[in-house]
Image (tube, rainbow, N blue to C red; front, side):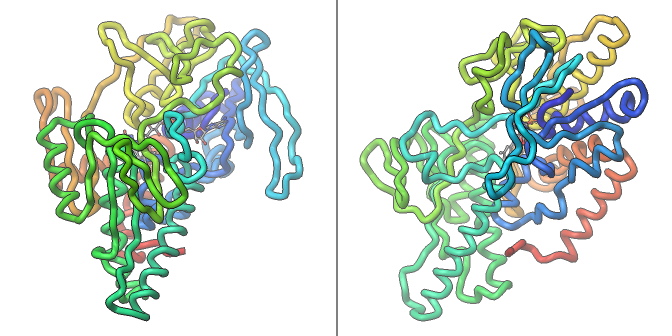
Amino acid sequence: MIVGGGAAGLELAAKLGKRFGRKHHDIILVERNRTHIWKPLLHEVATGALDANIDEVGYRAHCHRFGYRFFNGTLEGVDSAAREIVIAPLIDEDGREIIARHRIRYDYLVLAYGSVTNDFGTPGVQENCIFLDSRKQADRFRDKLLDHCLRVSRALTDDPGADAHVRISIVGAGATGVELSAELFNAAEALAYYGLEVFDASRLQVTLIEAGPRILPALPERLAADAHAELEKLGVRILTGTAVTEVTRDAMVLANGEQIASDLEVWAAGVKAAPIAGQLGELETARGGQIVVRPTLQSTVDDRVFAMGDCALCILPGNERPVPPRAQAAHQMAATVYENLARLMSSRQPVDFVYRDKGSLVSLSRYSTVGNLMGSLVGGAMAVEGRIARFVYASLYRMHLLAIHGWIKGSALIVVGHVNRIVRPRLKLH
Ligand SMILES: Cc1cc2nc3c(=O)[nH]c(=O)nc-3n(C[C@H](O)[C@H](O)[C@H](O)COP(=O)(O)OP(=O)(O)OC[C@H]3O[C@@H](n4cnc5c(N)ncnc54)[C@H](O)[C@@H]3O)c2cc1C
């Protein structure tokens, strides 16, 4: 039983279903959504640069093809003593119950329910900010963005000299905040082609606010400085060493008392485990809510329960810091859990997870891509920018496509993706 069909869970379900499903084993994927979209694409969905309807995967069709069963539901608790999970009642749009709260029994459980954005308890964030955690939030951001652009376009049509702007504040200058900032300028330029003749990038006021001393702390200083310069060239106002103490409906309140007037407010400052902690029975959880796992990715208290991806806290021997919550870690963990489940089922010892950091890349939309590659192929760490970086950045998603669709369909979808970039509009505007 796998809970969470994201970057890690769906790859595992496909592999397990293909090898063990339909034969002697019942592979079940429990997921609260009906479709999957790879999370690192959400900032592109938010600006309309990517049409999620094309890239998303329907779980029902996928499970039919790969030989696992799909249960649409939300995990509410784990009862490891009884080897059961508790699924919350499934409610329809009108508030009517479709399926009552129920329990499902498992022999082996893999928890892969990801993370949510961490608001660090900052007042007003939950009520006023958009988090790029889900397709729903990304769609909400795009709708609001288009409404504001339309409003400004109309104001300028009425009065070409009007001081009309779309003001967007983004908190957190990690990869998500930086990529979203750049993508917004790409979208603003494209809007001029699609009927908003009087709108262009000069009408965007984007402020990127970071509490730390610099943007992109995961990247080497030189690359972060290059990305900083590129963003400023686009017109992004970057505030580092600046804490947000409160978010109101139309302003970010800074620790120094300054208020940044904002039409759209995005919070992208770190992640914490999805809020199931507390209902996880005997499973050990860390302060951030993640499930603590051993190097084999089994929970510390139950050999039959694994956790992987963003919801797991895994500190490997010889390391002080946990494996980072990233798509490449999720991808690699899915492969280890697959291997270990196969070993347990044939009474062999599970192996330890080995994290191979392939580096970090940050896409500044079509303007640039920066990052560092790691590994023996490049002889340690190598800073990359431009076309090579762009190619490697896209490779991570290609690997996910191959893992969840297999080589033939995955390769075909990669080709279709290229064709779509040529034949389809540059922006999704609905
Ligand atoms: C905008 C954005 C950009 C990113 N860019 C990058 C990048 O460039 N490179 C990189 O390495 N990483 C990036 N990341 C991080 C990366 O997306 C995550 O590390 C990765 O998706 C984690 O995989 P996962 O399987 O653990 O979780 P997810 O992919 O989030 O999947 C979790 C799944 O569990 C489901 N779920 C949650 N709660 C429940 C529940 N209670 N019951 C049932 N189902 C549940 C969710 O619906 C989801 O389908 C980015 C993240 C974001 C938000």
